[in-house]
Length: 93
Image (cartoon, one colour):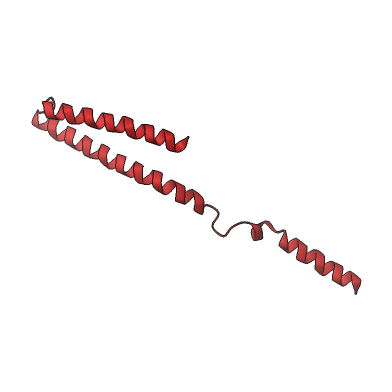
């Protein structure tokens, strides 16, 4: 009888120490939470880049690629991108 109790106790301890019982049900929930913010920024940047490429292609088709407003807007966008890249470096650091 004592051997039966010892065997049951060992079996119960083995079940308690099973790695699957220790691991959380959703192991990467925290990664998804952290990446959500960064992916939102990346999506916005991607959309801005696509819009810029479309504008450049349209303006080159019309022959107006060197107008003053376009140059000013490009400079503004470059400055915003430099500022946002600094923000990304701070987030990862």
